Structure formats: structure tokens, C-alpha cells
Length: 260
Ligand code: MF3
Ligand code: CO
Image (cartoon, rainbow, N blue to C red; front, side, top):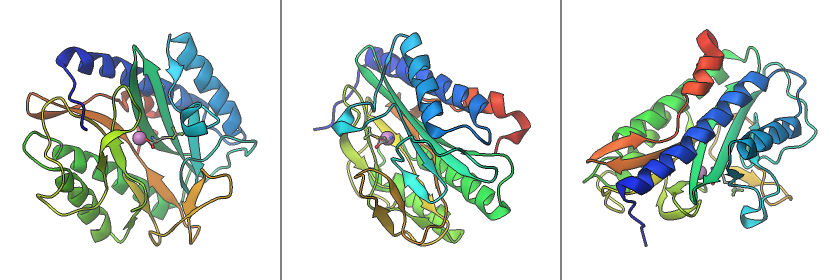
């Protein structure tokens, strides 16, 4: 069952997602060589609570932290720990909050200092593919149109698309219907309608698409241990068009000319 949101509910979703964007903006200030991923998690949790919300991932299906922090070959769902970031790492930070009963959900992959040019290009392409997917998140198109746009763009550039993990509907629950794969055929899948809110989150690998889930049950990495990138926006379909509810503006304000 796909829950359609009213305009008022979409505004509440925007509030939640704005706080996610601000939290990611805070993270951008702290991402430097030497900081541990657990320290980033604690800063984010405090920031979210200070802003009158609760972390959306903490306790979700038993997830132990506020953020998913996924370094280099970790695709998604990295659990914050004592690892200290190093120059040249790429780090996906995925953040969720619940505010006024609605979830916000967004992710960005950051560079720690200078990274290898081929890895920076992977990040750029993944981010571009997210926006290409969003262009199809309009009334009358179908879920498969979004995935097709992401897949064709990334594969044409020699990257691979993770299949086992997808975007999703989002609202009062973090994961609602429909599933939003990052691959697909045009004109297939659920029809997009006004009031739908979906998280679109391409997970794109430099090497092969194969994944391994570590024994902790969460950490998901590439089988070949080559790097992976992940960008996510929550998007509402409103007035026939895509309305991006989350925001990278706070991040990119902090990163300035270092933005990818
Ligand atoms: N953005 C991710 C997702 O939508 C994060 C979920 S982590 C979890 O799947 F712990 F909350 F599951
Ligand atoms: Co998500």
C-alpha cells in the first residue's frame, strides 16, 4: 500500500528533511583526517536532539546508531566505530530523523582531503545520476523510469549498479512502498502519483556490482573491495513535478569550491 501525503504532510516531511540536510552540513565541517566515525555519530545525534527531533535510524530494525557511515569499499549501512578517517578516503554519511511524526532521509558521499581522480569521478557520476533519476519522479511516469535513468547513465560510464539495495517510499515509516530500484526498464513498475514521497538513493560501484554483508548483519561492502558511492534525496511528487525535500545546500555551503 502506497501512502499518498497531503500538502500539509509534505510540508512536515520538508521540515524533517531540512534538518537532515542541516545535520549533513554539520558533518561536512567535521570530516577531517583523524576523526572517528563514532565521534561523527555522536555529534549528529546531539545536533538532531538539540533541534527537537529524534534520530530516525537508531533502533530501526535494531540498528545501533544515528548515522550510517560507509567508508571506501563499504557501500551502505556502515556502523560508526573507532575507525579514524584518513586522507584519500571517501565516506558516505546517511542520516535520518523523525520530526512531527515524519521521516527525513538523505545521504552524501564526502571526500577526506584529496582523493584519487577515478574515485572523485565515481562520486560525481553517482550524484549526477541521482538528479537524472529525480527528473523522472513526476506524475504519470513509473518507478522503472527512475531506475532506468540512473542505470543507463552509470553503466555507460563503466560503473556498476548495486541491485540488492534500493530506494523506497518514505513517510511516517522510514521504509514504505514502493521499492525504488536503481535499475529498470522504462514504463514499468508502480505509477507515480501526486502525494507520493520516495527516497531515491543510487549506490554505484567502481568495480563489479557484487556485494557482501559483513557478519554484523549491516555493513554492506563491495565483494571486490573497490570503492562505492551513495547519494540520496527524499523527493515528493507534488503538482505533477519532483519536489526535492532534502537538501545538499548546507553541505555545499561548507565545502565551497571543494564541492564535487
Ligand atoms: N537510508 C538508508 C535506507 O533508507 C538507511 C537505513 S539504515 C537503518 O535504507 F538502519 F535505518 F535501516
Ligand atoms: Co533511504
